Every structure is written in C-alpha cells, then in structure tokens.
Image (cartoon, rainbow, N blue to C red; front, side, top):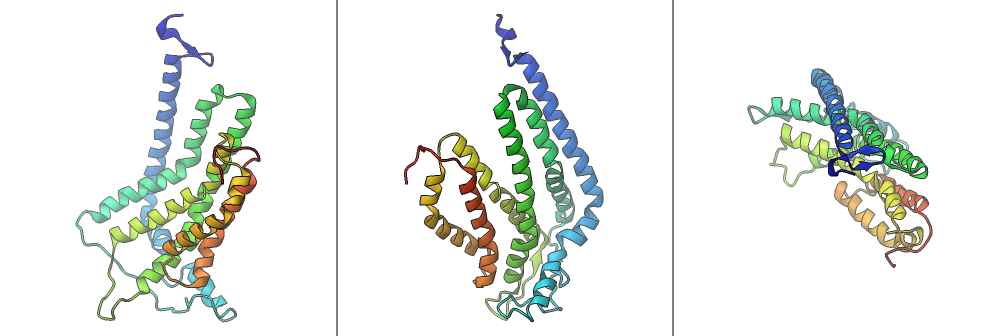
Length: 271
C-alpha cells in the first residue's frame, strides 16, 4: 500500500480530507445563511427579544407581579414604572453590535445542522452500538443546549439584570447602562447556561471513558450541593432566597440527571 493511498474506514486519507472539507463548507454556508437572516431581522429581534427584559412588560416580571399578591415571599416585580434606557457611547458600537449579535444568533440557529454535519462525517468510522450512542448524545446535547439557553433568557438573566440595575451603592449614583455592557452580559449569561446544561452529557461521556461512575457522583453529592449553591449565588447576587432557589434547582436537577445517566462500576477516581 502506497503512503498516499492509506485507507481508513474504506476511504483513503485524501478522500477523508475531501469529505471533511465539504463538511466544513456546508456548515459555513448554513451559518452564513442564518447570519444573513438574523442581520435582516435584527431590528425586530433586538426590540422584541433582546431588549425585552429592560421593560416592565417582560413576561417574567408580569408573572411575579401577579403572583406576588398570593405568595408574599416572591420578588417584588410589581413596579410598572421599571424601565432601563440603553445608551451608546461609541460611534461604531451599534453597527458592530448588529454584526456580532447576528453572528451569535446564527450560531445558535445553525447549531442543529452543524451537529448533524459532524455526525454524518464521523458516523462511517463508528461501530453499530457506537452509532446508537452517538446519535442519542448529539440529540440530547442539542436539546439540553437549547434548554439551557431558554433558562438563561427566561429566568437567570432577567433576575440578575433587574437586581443589578436597581441596586444602589448611593442615591447620588445614577445607573446608565451602555449597549456594550448590556449585550456582553446578555450573551454571556445565556451561553453560559447553555454550556452548563451540557453537564449530564459530559458526565455520560466521562462514564463511558471509565473516569467516573454513579457511586462517585453519589459520594460527592453533598460537596456538589455546596458548589452549586455558591455558583447560584454568584449568578444571582441578590441574596433573595427565592431567586437563589430558582437558579439552584435547575443546576441540582442537572446533577441528579447526571447521576442517573452514568453507569455503575469501577472508576479511575476514588471518593
């Protein structure tokens, strides 16, 4: 067999390289198409989706404002005058924000197709049982990423944003929120939650590799609770027990889901 004709999985090295090139090309085309659509729709997306938490009509605020009359310990979101004006202090910020936000929205929208293309590329090299496992992993990982982004947008970011905006170190200091500051926190909070929701998938992969097992996660559950409480307190610095619980419970659910997904057996780690 010649050096350049080495075959892997029924295909030569150069055929694999060509397949990878077309896979990357199709993924880039998908991202570009989604970017173009997001760029055109960005004024509507910005006004009705991204800036929605800056006004009193955001659905989470309305829900807690209405529920506050029945459950006294809920956060006080009944202020109908709450409104935050986002200001721009740099000449090019609005244009650059339009481009960068369209790009991130394109990545989120094209994510399932990108995962599908990666799946098609690696599938020929897998055994039948590995194909089954990887198919479930890709599907589960995609769903959990979107679920995390939804939790970040619907719960975590609004709670954090409203607390930080209304917090006053002094009555003489007026908050003026810049466009860059708002967008950076908005995107970071949502994408961080999307990544955090991949914890069960990560645990499943580590379990398949024999690095962790169910007994290990159960043994370290009490330490995990402390870490998750600290993480929840960092994400939501309001100190309000209800707000802390709203963030902590999904994270704890992810840990318990990880416990259920990993397998029993010896591990490379010891509690």
